Length: 329
Image (cartoon, rainbow, N blue to C red; front, side, top):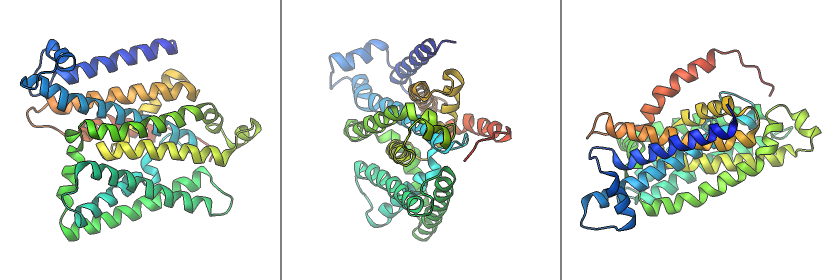
């Protein structure tokens, strides 16, 4: 199937899922009320308020975080040349969880916007530790060292978080926050998240030509004049920004960053100038659709979005794990 046609179909599917997300849920709202909520908003109309203040920001947050996870996963797989790589390998999820744990213990009742910023700061902090461990070692940065350092940092922060949660008995509070963070998203939170999303995606798209070279091997990249360490640093910055904002809203939904780049690569080939845009659209579609399903399957009770994504992701992950995939570190 031609690439342009694939992108067009994916965009139509995304648009359809976004429209359904606005009209469907525990309360179904007619399409004309959706248009009315945006073009002639009536504060006394319950349907308008639900659309404008609840469903629209939630739908956009799901799309942005899904695209962010997918693009960061594609960059991560190119940078490490590991088909099973996803942003959590850098310890981002564990770092965000640790900072949230500290916030729940020492600053209870922190406003939601600051909780998002704390989660983002935790992801950044863990990535900085990984980066320091890799850069100040011998032989500079390499995919294998990046993965090993990320796993070590992730285990360290996960152990600390578990110990603190057990001691202060806040494990349930943390679980509720991760399960329901997207339910509380509003326009002010999107105003904080969206600029970071634009920055992270812009860096990734600018790097897309050289990511294709790096995804093969270092020798090919060097022969094409690619500065390996500089490129990996910029790619790492993009992953941290995108995955950090994704974790802050959806929690550790690792499977978006794992399975979506593979689907994009299946349709787009090995050129990351094509993989990254398609990954963004497919990631947004997967997350918006999963969020819609989470609201509708057991309405009025909402299911965790991550659990529904895992239902798709786990079989796909097991399929990948069974394949004999050879790559050079």
